[in-house]
Amino acid sequence: MRIDIITVLPEILSGPFSHSIVKRARDKGLVEIVVHNLRDFSTDKHRRVDDYAFSKGAGMVMTIQPIEAAISYLKSQRDYDEIIFTTPDGIQFNQQEANNLSLKKNLIILCGHYKGIDHRIRENFITMEISIGDYVLTGGELAAAVITDSIVRLIPGAISDETSALSDSFQDNLLSPPVYTRPAEYNGMKVPDILLSGNDKLIDDWKHQQSIERTRLLRPDLYEKYLKDQ
Image (cartoon, rainbow, N blue to C red; front, side, top):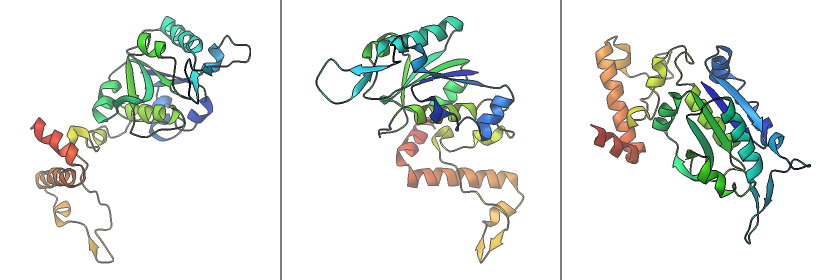
């Protein structure tokens, strides 16, 4: 898989992709992540990528020229399955979307900034718009990092125990069950006896019931989705 990220602040993305699972996946050659500075595509002598909107109101707008140039350049190199724009009014990102995107080969993520981008880009180039939550960030870089991380960890081989990702929260619209580790007792606090029984079937049944109950109590919205899928 290859993920190209277009941003006006590439420095923000140097850290998230240089550690942990994403770094290991890159080192293994499972994913190629390339961050592009949007200013490199600007024809403005000062490398500007923003301008005033054609209307009253505070804030600047990302201009069409450098974005079109960046996307066109990348598309001339390879085919892309999706061109994603990070924006508060996009679809809500969830585990199912992460699963779907992890099956793609090439992705572009355009990081929003300022008051947004010239709408002609959204009308003519963007194929998918994503929000990671109902709040506003300074820019789309952190959203791009979240999306990328959630996708990469699902690529086969990125996690040493590939079954681990299948038991994550939000798979099948359920939260994960509670987890415990040694010691079995600490200051009078005990691990549930079922987890010490050695009976895999009973343990699996217990975990599933715990997932259902936790989802019902903590995320009734997800619980409703789970019930509809049954």
